[in-house]
Image 1 (cartoon, rainbow, N blue to C red):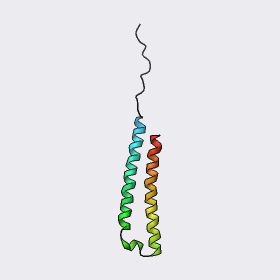
Image 2 (image 1 turned 180 degrees about the horizontal axis):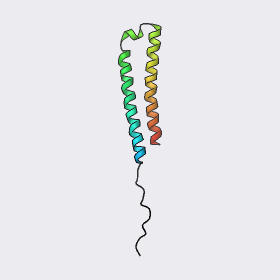
Image 3 (image 1 turned 45 degrees about the vertical axis):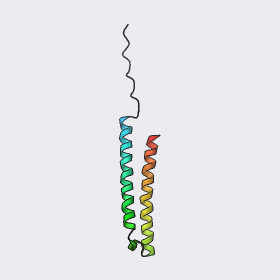
Image 4 (image 1 turned 90 degrees about the vertical axis):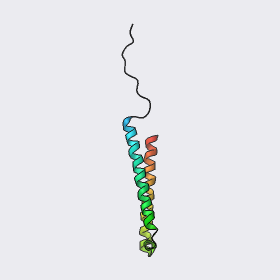
Length: 81
């Protein structure tokens, strides 16, 4: 008797969609880190810290850029679980 032609076994590892999502998340991390470096380079200029208003604005930009990096890493971590 010949073996029956049942469903083929599923491939091991993550699906194509999961791999694509992980690659997109990794790219988002790279972009967020580049944006953070750009903000930090701009913040090296003493003029952005000249007044309380400028200081607050600079600090807010840095915080937002840092949080974007953290969120990108969290998104990748969620995809890996």
